[in-house]
Length: 195
Image (cartoon, rainbow, N blue to C red; front, side):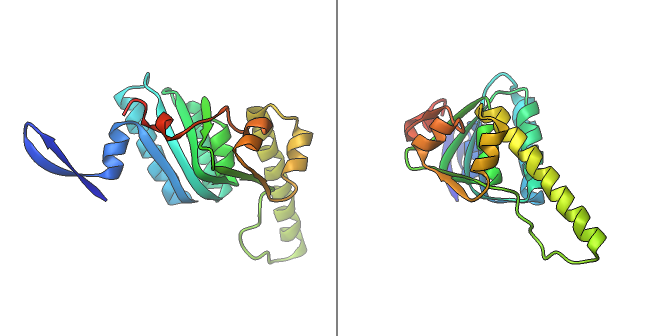
């Protein structure tokens, strides 16, 4: 989608993403994967180079995706010199919930939804028993690490997170606030600040 902008140099077309990024708004949408993680790193690097004192807004609407790719997002959010605010604008499922919960300020629109669960095995498991044992151990270690991250950012105990992630646990906006996944329920106007 392109928009038309008027300036002293005339009229030009600009992509909606470029216009939003110039206002420090970055979307996390669709599946979280290696390609989207690299694009995210580039955008956050550029915004930090432009002005590391101004906040960056991440607008999240994702079903989640690959944990390894999601941890790239997580590491960038945690290390960004520019403060990062996250907004659940639809759904923040699985890895999207972790990203929502890990920023400096966390918001959700009134009808947003968050879902947390245990890590899932993405591909068919095959191989000999030693390989399967290694995969199972790795999956359990990933589960432990993800539960620790959620506990750190929500203020919940690891035991409470373990119980909540034992199945696909859906939270509406109020439940997300109560569990500590977000700080505030806001309307669309909050997204328009500093535009």
